[in-house]
Length: 445
Ligand SMILES: Nc1ncnc2c1ncn2[C@@H]1O[C@H](COP(=O)(O)OP(=O)(O)O)[C@@H](O)[C@H]1O
Ligand SMILES: [Mg+2]
Image (tube, rainbow, N blue to C red; front, side, top):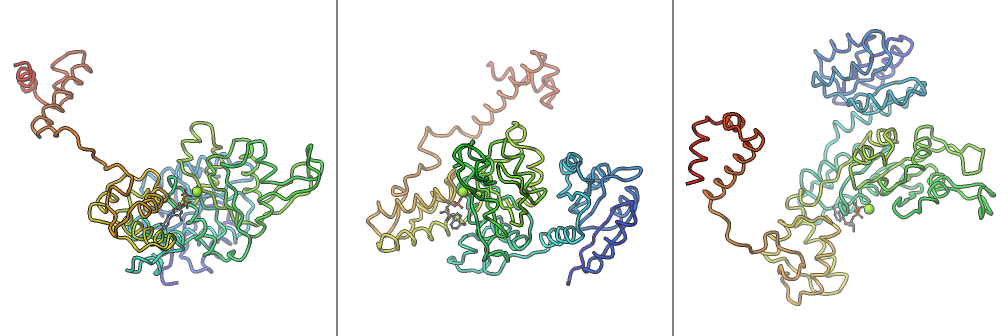
């Protein structure tokens, strides 16, 4: 290990703290182990840590307060909290305050070690070579992209693919979430094991539990034989819960338990099935919003959100849109056995400026259509079927007009806000009374 990551352990129980510290040191980390929150903060004030492992129940200042203060001190360590069994709510509180992950006691030391290793890898992994090559045809598990935001996605995939961690993949529709899931599976040591996908948007609400968890014979009318659910089918492979944001509330409780306890019971069954699969999930919306709306369980959200990978929308990927455009043109030409096409300068400008609400999927569709419509070698804007961003409109106002307009709007707002009181309005606008008076006079002239 060239870089020795620094780990902070905060636990008042020596029987916990000392062996943990030994084990982490054996694994090559530089460890500082302390017994109280006060000591932890003193350590954070003098050294930079990569990962902090914090017991939530401490004498004096408790773990939550430690996290709160570490944050106030702008400590950049990833923190993992340890909590007693059955107090998940406190763990959720800790995660709201900025903790990354939690473990319920008792846990196997190896579990903690895995977690630490994962966060250290996320911090130190570099961009995979296959993705940073100069050729435009290079792709990383089918993903084309050279923009900093995409290189960061590839870097994260490299860092976390071969771990057991649950990963949530976020991104607008069409940004390539399924490709990321595929890359994570391909890059893991589970690549030869089953890869089971569940599209949560496609399962009727009443069938969710049966689909996910399976059922025993006779569990309900029509259950004439035992059936394994998707969780069980994934066995020691990978389970992808695609479009997780569409999962109804009721099955969410059971999913949480399955992830948390690594076990489930089939519907109508008493036998406990042990789960060893690795879980991936995708969402096209910010699940925090769903939590706020009461449509997504908060505890499940925090359980999933430990290692998010966020795909940038296409409009934030700079010239990637052109790389992708050329790639799709070539692909479409090959599929339709037509000669290869090129993008005109205007077409390139249009691609670059379009907002792409449907992201890469929309781009791919636009270009395959263009190949069909375009008889010449060069694809022009008219073939692309997307509106130019700024349709011809009345000539824009001059700068002076625009400034004047904005100014009178602000003045009006200030006057309304102060009930017409000119002195207060001037104060609000940060100008003198005299200036306001002059401006008002000029307007009425
Ligand atoms: N970076 C990329 N490079 C090449 N093709 C991509 C890329 N991102 C997405 N695609 C393609 O765009 C389409 C949408 O991707 P998908 O993973 O289904 O999106 P999502 O699941 O986020 O809606 C697919 O055809 C996929 O192959
Ligand atoms: Mg998808």
